[in-house]
Length: 374
Image (tube, one colour):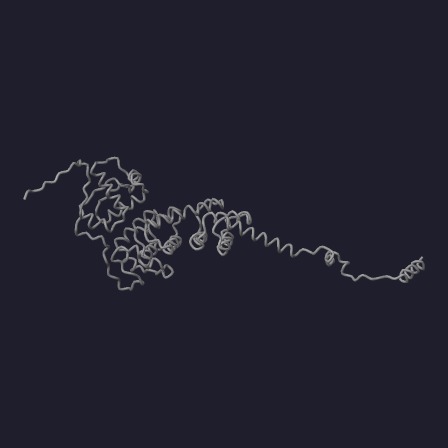
């Protein structure tokens, strides 16, 4: 039997990918992170020297923070070695050989003698389909002790999150920050990617308060958001909505916590279109002279109860209301015609006295009295 020789017409312009990377690293990594890793390999094979975070972000149509997060991830799993200058700017990236012995699952830990709050033990990255994500009302935020925080912080993913969040905050993490990170990761089952995007999103809107970030996380859980991609889609839609509301109200700021609850109610619970919300905002300004979210909520709740689904429905509702008001006004007006009953004018106080009928004798007596006085 003759041997078979393999040939190719391909050029040498190729990028070599390790099978170990494909078998062990790629399945458990975020798709966006894999894209960055492959592009860096591509640049390495062609000896790209004019490379920066901004050029990578432009080429992959991502943000610079997305690129930094991807690099931090591959650095964490020891696939690359990153060198930084005194300003914490990346100056060099060295690729390490993937090794079969490396496990992508975070190392499990043994609980401290002090019992941990009821939650799952993180032996791997929390699954995006964690059933607890759909029952946020059941989440009870535990208060982790110092021993518990130290033990839980040994988890590789938690360390990755802590490092990234500290970079976003541009300050050392406070106890409240760490408590929140552990709550999101341990109790709510958020993946590390989702937690990082959560902090990035809130901080980019100048919201660094732990309570605010937790409120956004609970909203996402309620809406069934389980991945970074879903969160990006949701926030893009949400941003368009609140920007339109801000424009209608003449505001130049991000919504507050209470205002966010109103907006979420209008969109997700009343299921009203943006056109209806803007119409309610406009009517609020006309009637109150100020951006009153509570007043707008009353309008939209009323429309929802009346099954309003479009501006045309609002116009019909206005017409019905005007017709009813006209009917009520007519019913209150006095009757006219030969059979109408004359009613005294309440503003004339003399109508309160009974009228007297005088005879000729009465007039004669009054005339006599006047003559006698003279």
